[in-house]
Length: 323
Ligand SMILES: [Zn+2]
Image (tube, rainbow, N blue to C red; front, side, top):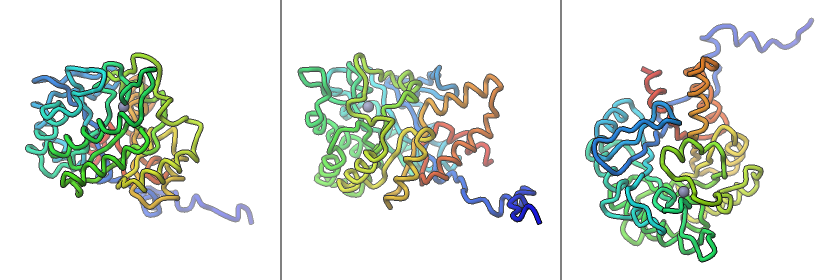
């Protein structure tokens, strides 16, 4: 008798396939990134990311209510300030754009979890993620104090989770310490733990105006060729107090997501980055890909690889598909 095995028996109908499906996507695991830009009445389209916008804080309450109503549990806030300087002071102003945006969103949708990105690249005039030393290199230890100040200002503004994305060594520990000392010991840290120096961030840089004015970020973000290094990064961040760890980008690094998920019990998040989003958008616009099907397949693959949560620009579209 041949064939001896017939796995196709369980693929015959959609109901059978639904019964044996191993990975389930849920809106509960999605986080929607938002760009908050200093100003008023702004909703600026981001050309390289069709369907995404830069919003001023005053228009965010409306968006926050829509997102909360669609059952997306969390947003991740990035700030675009008016003024940039060499040390990124706009990042920790009490009336800064993110601080302002957090308050507006929490007032409008108190149950929506607001996660804030902590980094300096959108706030420095040179576009690097930290303070430069005399030679133009990003100084790790000089940057740590500033990051802790930024994190604390976000917590004071009402942020629910702090997400440092700078890739400086030791920043999870110093942020944890600074939050704890000020009575914010209940605020979790979601750390960009395994963040690669990726070309897939291209559209984001247009969105946030955070392209480095010289050099690149390979001196602090990870080499795409490495994976054992990611395990070390994860071990350090967890030891320093990270409550959630992030792998970024997602789809080109599914093997890394799998490995981290197998090695560590800490909740794991993956960031489906701007380039991953724009590729699907562009090819769909050309009629080369089926957009809805590719959204579902890409998110499923990230979940299947082992991510508990996914940061994705497709979150509102996914919510729409469910309804
Ligand atoms: Zn940065």
